[in-house]
Length: 614
Ligand code: M6R
Image (cartoon, rainbow, N blue to C red; front, side, top):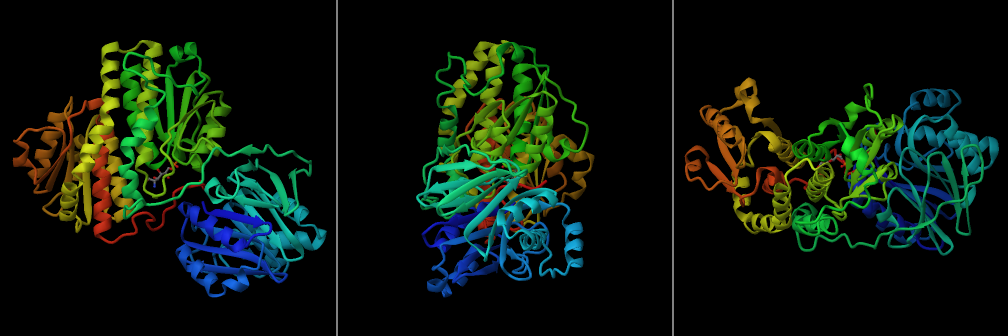
């Protein structure tokens, strides 16, 4: 994880670095730091905790610090070593002339550290990154060439990294490199930018290129040199970034999460736009390149994803199996990659990721690709590493999601799965046309139903408050809404730190029911359809153990008032589409409980938005 940014040119480097780090805060917020060359001396400024702490340090000495026109910065999600000032990046060597920022994990850091310590290096931190600073310094001592020092160092490093390096003796120069971690170079007028992600540079330039693995770039205000790890010269593939500078504003909402929950009606409209034109027309998915004969012959689909994207994938399994009659396996990417990859060219492998940078999922799709499978990527970031692995791409167009807890991107992924399933079903003619056009109609009116829920959010707020002192929370559902129960529980635990679990309602009696008593809230996702009566019975079983019962339902049945202490009613919807509606109140419950408890809703502890380490 972590975010890095670098600048060399004629502007005040510290302003650009701090702005850049602000837009990369989604990548981590355990600590931050910058290294600048001030009066021919590399100086480090670091702070534990939120970025504001670093800004406060910089502001105290701003006139001095802002003299520098070259610098590198870092925002950290701790992997090796606690989130302290010592472990904050940039890291330096014994002589203090080198400064390094790093995103990734140096896997052989222990061996490297031992070797460097034997050679007299003294380490100040517990991080894997500090080895790079000492290693580059020792290579520089041999070569007096910073690019060569970095190149030689990377030959000894194992693992994943994006690195930016400056050296006091090499004026106005940044050297940057990467392997299995994203890094792009922005090109300005007599200036260059380096960053982990587009938002850090987009307000300054749209001209940029992505570094490929094992490439090393050397930047000065007047020059840019790109080589590979064998020292061959390379021409960068410069592109115009398809991004507009975005004002990441909360638009009057207290938190980004609440704003993003409210954006969901428009997100649904965006995802459908251009793909679902009319209920009597077939779905168009222009970026799906798998030909129709191959689609007709598909006998298996594997979906890999993590976290919230995994829950969307689980809903996707239900829809695709139901509509297309193709067996679908869903697996967390982190499990998929550590066992035998059984896939082939007749299997479609779908990777789902909001960020497109989740390391486990990237590895999983690469493994599947090496076996000849067609790779379809569903992502909110068509410019991401994962998107570049895709044979077919389904961009979800949710817009930038700032809150660490995914909400609108989940909605966009769900809607994308409906479109993909309908697309395949239309090619395979595996489902009745009337059923498909009914679903298309329901998709088109879905945004209005979400809007209705949002219009009555105060009721959900009241209900949430009543449960905010609970230490534990159980969500139950069956069938297509089992993933909704998992996602509702994940939302609650990640932002309120309440121990929440989603169960299939039928499993409750096989163990978890032992936990129930009058202190335990049980939320039943009770949507009309095949399993309604079954969930009702399971809810009765929970009620008989005195649990505090909450129903989330589209039923208007008055009898539910006897069984449930609280009822959250949502508009009526078909069972197949119900996950896209039922999730909205659960996102709101998580939000309101966390907000009531005074938690850091948008940046919950220990988390980062983009998990770029395995
Ligand atoms: O970017 P991705 O969708 O690949 O990220 C996967 C998970 O890290 C992510 O969904 C995580 O679980 C979120 N914090 C959930 O809110």
